[in-house]
Length: 166
Image 1: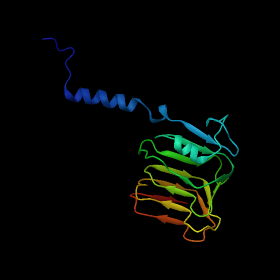
Image 2: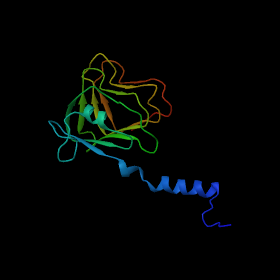
Image 3: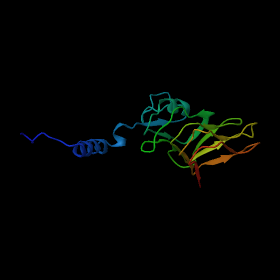
Image 4: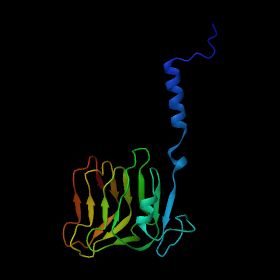
């Protein structure tokens, strides 16, 4: 009997794990760029002009880099990501990207998002500036300033493992 091509279940699982680990999560990730007045496709040389446009395009593992400036809100997350491939929304330089709206500026309604280094300015409007929904599980808001609220700055429903850091 020829045993050269005979595999047991353990060998097949090991090969599948190697194939899975060999495909890095960043291999398919895209970095989207946003800049004030941008009219491009979201590349570094041709940035988008609206953060919401980048959120609408971003998929698991993608990063949205927001260049310094002031942007109109509100913005809303549109899809879930995963632990291995979160969607990252970050300021290119911490606290130089200001998102402003009268009241609600950011609604975080999906799992595995990282918000980093932004300024959320509520203009003393009638609503909460940052709303964190039930499905924003395992998301993080870090190094982000939330300012000028007429009501509560942040409203957190009941997501699992949600973190506000610094």
